[in-house]
Image 1 (cartoon, rainbow, N blue to C red):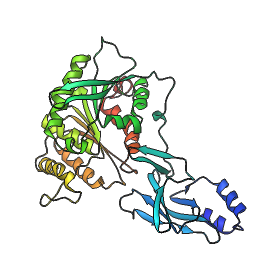
Image 2: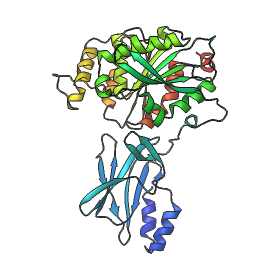
Image 3: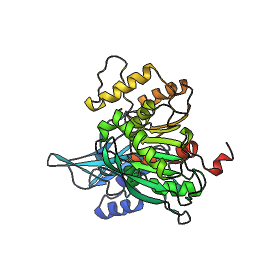
Image 4: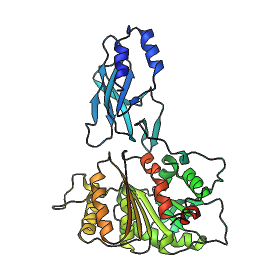
Length: 378
């Protein structure tokens, strides 16, 4: 058990030198089988573990080893888990959230960075790292004067093997610039396309200045994508321009936007990738516990649940087991299957974060937009 490392410290002389040597012998947090021990060293009134694992108390107290300035907490962490966390250090009655100074593993997001704990068996995918043998695609920022929103920009990825004489599928990514920053998506595309696991594709990385409103089943957003953005890209590049070659994806509210856009334009997008969708709904009434920002989402999902419709051909759904949204995503899958759409569903022992979504990209994109290597086996 990883708690044995604390017993080792308790059995030592508990001098500063002995604690220094003990710290130097271990990698933190300490993971042994299904147990993980978090450790912090310093003077404080209290220390709390702050994490985002739905179903567990979001704040758990660390205990101090008598005669030392070492604080510890041991808890269960199922194999294959990945958990983001911070430590709250309480001094003079005030708490400060910090990254774990004993753990160099960090995950970044639009709000900063969190420390990361990996359970036994979890491995960071090799295909997220830059491969010098994989030629990089070209990434530009393009401006579009749209009828719907006026002047907007989007990221445009063109694969390294691009030729005007060929035709390509199109992938449109909600919150695309965040996928590039926090989910290594440019590198992932370079690697998977070079390995022929994912088709050479034109990829649009779109973002919204008002995402919580525009992504919540906003008719204008669906119109912007389908009547402004996609036709512009299809006029500019040699795309296949058929539903099977149009894929729309997003995470959280971006997944809601992908599904609701497909519902407003059924049959236009033949491929959907929905990651940790904020698919809030109500079984009774129209009030929801997540607040007014979710009201349009609830109204949309209530309509869809009342009359599920096949709006695409293939749908890949993923969600973390440690998310509060796991119930909504699990309940969505049988409805999608019931329409006759081809659906794949994947769960991971992870939370609502960019690296969870990153880790699912290979499975999702290689099924939705398979490259030549995988097409041989289909």
